[in-house]
Structure formats: C-alpha cells, structure tokens
Length: 199
Image 1 (cartoon, helix red, strand yellow):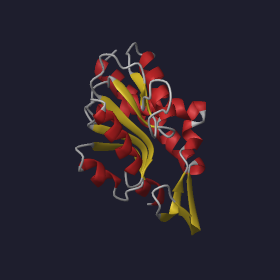
Image 2 (cartoon, rainbow, N blue to C red; image 1 turned 180 degrees about the vertical axis):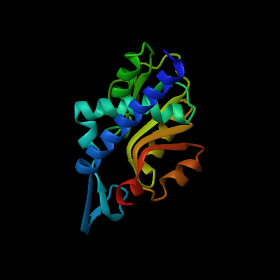
Image 3 (cartoon, rainbow, N blue to C red; image 1 turned 45 degrees about the vertical axis):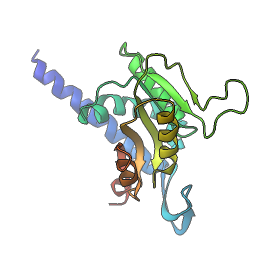
C-alpha cells in the first residue's frame, strides 16, 4: 500500500475527529445570552463556554486529547512534551487525558497539577507531579480570556525552575489572552477560538 496514501487517510481521520468534537462542543459547551454572563476574569460577555462538558465527559475528553496529540501539536511542529499541566481545576483532566493518550503510543508525558497556592501543610508544594528529569512543561488551560489564570501557573512553574514556552487551551475567547501570554514569551495554541462558534 502507498505510504503517502496511508498518511492522507490518517489526516482525514484526525480532521473527522476534530469535526465531530466541534459539533458536540457547539451543542454542549457554548451558550449565548442577551443577559451578559459574569466571567472568572471579572468581565462580562454574552458568550459563555463551559468546557467541563468536554473535560468531565470521558468520551469527549479522550477525543480532545487525541486531537491535541495528533493534530494541534504536530501542526505547530512541537515535539512530544516532557510534562503537561496547569492551574487546577481546569487543566487537570486535560493533563491526565494527554498523559494517557501518549502512554497508548508508548511515550511518557508526566501530568502536572499547579495549585492556586502552596499547601499549608506537608511539603508545602504548589506544584504536584513526578517531575524528576523534567525541564519544560506544556501549559494547559480550558478557556483563555485574559490569560490571568494561565499566567499564575506560569509564574509558579518558572519559580520552580521549569521552562514554559507554549500553552494549549480548548477555547481562546480572543479577549487579550494571546497577547498577554505572548508578552511573557508564551505561544498560545487553541483548539478553537470564540470566532469559530459565532462566525
């Protein structure tokens, strides 16, 4: 069989996965309201994204992890990361799903959990994970608005000595987050943008 043809079929399969998950996302995570929603950033918007409809659903979460692994990162020419994670709680399911997705291909990617603040007991750690030998962490988030939550995770990771250069999110609300991350030397890689849902 022609190896080029196999590659083409694989790419079609990946695009089909992305299309299937997008159609579900449009039905389950996106809402428009004439009355503005209050956002975690403190702002208001008529457009609301509840990505827990993906991250808390086993089937959709697995699809998301495969899309990030097989489509998003390869298209950005990024290698398999050493570790991936971000601020709890939004990033946690994505981190564990990605670790499992790469394990299915025989590759080790360690999940990372960044607490909102250091523990007040035990080892007083803010960053959790088995990270021996890890130098760089792929930052994860569910929804990016201004990027404030992600930047808290960046600060904690960098203070602990880890390199952070890329951030993957499910939805970029296109409200300044990309520029704010870029100002810290971080490239944002969204699976979708708000404009994908409202165009």
